[in-house]
Length: 416
Image 1: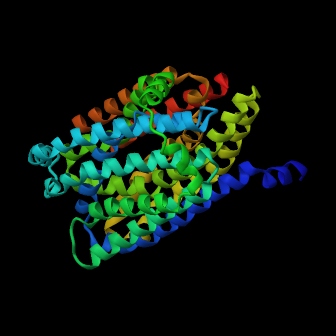
Image 2 (image 1 turned 45 degrees about the vertical axis):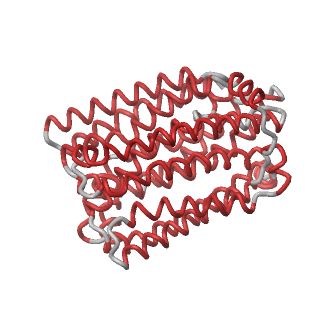
Image 3 (image 1 turned 30 degrees about the vertical axis):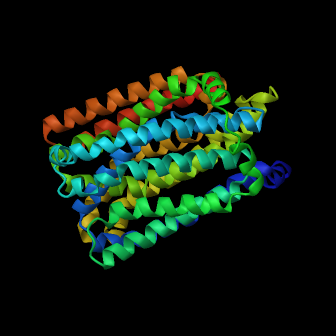
């Protein structure tokens, strides 16, 4: 009991609990409104929204060039602020370039067989800019252990997003699943900037082009290795949507997107919250030259003990849960979830620990794993498309990645 009491009293536990509680609230709100949304919007509407968000997430990767992670590393707050300024500078360039997507709106809509998608692509640069500012702001607040502000940002964004989608559905506004995320992100970022403590603005207002360029040069491994890795990783995550939409239509993407929303999205959000707290904690351990391996080993065994019974229940009950929760037309969503359970279980461990290569300067290895994952996913999807089977495509795509995650987790433990 003594080690347990020590953990419960530690700052690490309290910081993780703050972010986790915010994400739990957000996920509960999201789950509560989906039975309403699935009765207001058709699977095709969800498919078009998934396409918009998938394209936006890929473009958003180029905005900060991954310099948000560098904000955590310098000893000096001013150097950290220069890293943040570098991220903002790159974001402005990318967003101005992204405005050109409006000229190709109709060809993009035709490519993905997504009716009315072109009507909303003008919002893409705005949404991408807001994502970038939100990411930079999150890491700046976490550097100063203001996890309460990070939690407020996450909760406000999800609550406004949920309310906006529901209101649009009630008003029969077809694009509500796209408009609401953009508006909610804008409001949440505005609230976070307004509520940020005055002392945290001090270093941010000191502008130095020379200092910014020096900080960007010092942490150039992030755009050199972490950015390509994140790009490949994001492409792998969105490749099912991008490849299956032209082959099987937006309705299939609606079912698959809902399956990932109900399973992978909570895993990703919760694990990223723990990941960020662990990143800040382990960065201090590295600075003090303390060993990481015992911490990493305990993390792996703890997550495995939690996820295995959940995975078994999910396999047994997912089709029934989806039919009860979302409606009779959504049982296919539960079947897709059942096919992805090995992938989802191992992703929970990997996503929690994928900050370790950044801490130890081993971004090149993580980039190699991401490239292999992308190749495996594309191969599985292509085989499924050639066979004319969505089920084969999903099974081959996600379970090949599950095997790769086992090797990657073992590598995290070894290098730690």
